[in-house]
Length: 135
Image (cartoon, rainbow, N blue to C red; front, top):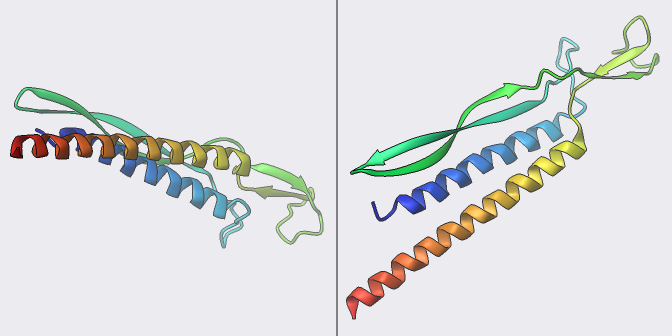
């Protein structure tokens, strides 16, 4: 029970790490097309709060429920010289906006840091309590 606060922070850090990984994957595939000529579809992690009750103490944890594809439309540019261009001269590109991915990555990084700060604060409180009990 004494370590529940640490677990909450750890689950938050794990969730934010997945969020950063997905944003990085989206950025890496911002101009990717698969072997069949289909553009990459942006992915988004879905989080879920999980209520954990042990010995009457309720704590919420966060977990990644699933990673889904963004159904927003693909980008189109006019480039008739591109071998992937359709008969109308337009090339279909992934629905990844690099600016949005960077903002999402910075937000995930800040959330990760906040969870890390909470973890360290809790850890220091436990260590100080143990030191007081030793004296």
